[in-house]
Amino acid sequence: MKKQIFIALLFFWAIPSGFAQLKTHTFEEAEQLSKENPKPIIVFIHTNWCKYCKLMENSTFKNPEIISILNDSFYFVALNAETKTDIIFENHTFKFQPTGQNTGIHELATALATLNNQISYPTITILNKKNTILFQKQSYLSAKELISILEKTQEIAIFEKNSFPNP
Image (cartoon, rainbow, N blue to C red; front, top):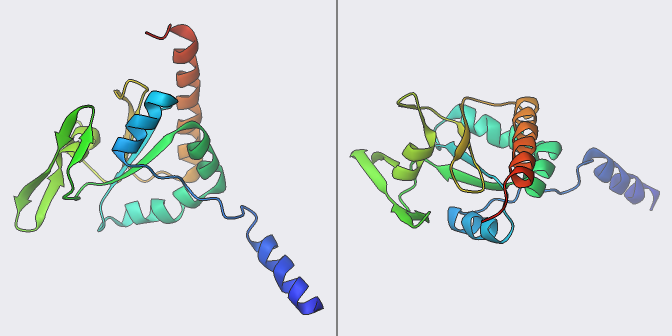
């Protein structure tokens, strides 16, 4: 009996963040939720073959502080740039655009990940409550770097909320 209690305590001690999971939304869900409760939308644009994307998925987005900030203050959308599924966002249907046999890029990924006429993965794009681009960054971000960006974005969101009357 003591051994079972010890194992249970060891299990809960080894997982201090509990079982917190990052809430991921589709664009349609994020857009609808934002109408009810306006928050910035964080879009993580990635591909299946990108090693830095996988690194962010397995480290940055597993960080308990990142999970807490994103779940509380943002709507998080993970966009595979090579998805072939149509996405309706801002009353527009975005589609996959083939560039060759079994290759291509989604129009929404192009719209949100293009910076200086280039697309790189991973890209983090932050949309404000009007769904316009507030911030873009094309590179791997550590948890510490992303926390800094999210905190600055929260400050801007608070400023916008307090400075401008709602229409």
